[in-house]
Structure formats: C-alpha cells, structure tokens
Length: 102
Image (cartoon, rainbow, N blue to C red; front, side, top):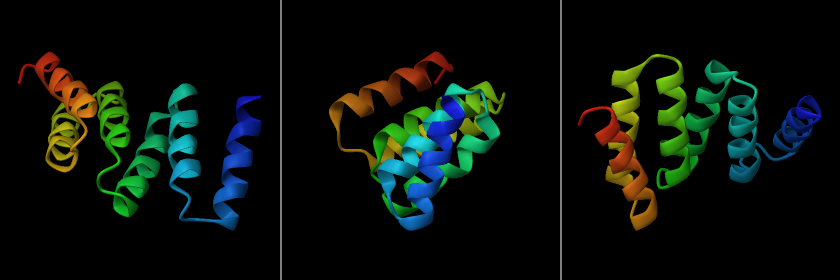
C-alpha cells in the first residue's frame, strides 16, 4: 500500500511538479518507510518553493536527526524559526532545538 502511495504522489508530481502538497506528502511517505535520505531532497524542494512551509522544517529536522546529522538538524530548525510566523510551528521548532541542547 505504501509503495502505491509513493507511486501516486510521483504521478501527481510528474503532472504538476510544483504541487507542494504532493511533494510534502512524498517526503512524509519516505519518512514513514524509513527512507530518510530520499525524504530530505523532497523537504528541500518544498522549502525552495515555499520558504515559510513550517512543517517541512520540523519534519526535515527530525529526518536529519534520524540520519545522525545533528548539526544539520539544528541548522534546519534555525532556518524554520527564521522563516515561520506560525506560533505552533515556532514552538515545535524551539522544543526540537531545546532537546538537542540549544
């Protein structure tokens, strides 16, 4: 079932490469399948199109942590704090940084 979701999202992106919802969905499907290295370029693509997409910073940072890239995760969270205006998202990003000792 998960592979069919990935295939569906890839088909949507083939037709509409700018679909943030499909791009973010694809990143999250990769995360759900522990394919963290494949998820990161998708999170970056979302943020290239919409730098204020707060959830991509949070989940991208979490993904970097799973990859063992703690400094990169901190940077990702910081980027999110600089870009996000949503109080809930900012709180999540601040909490993630605090857990990492910042």
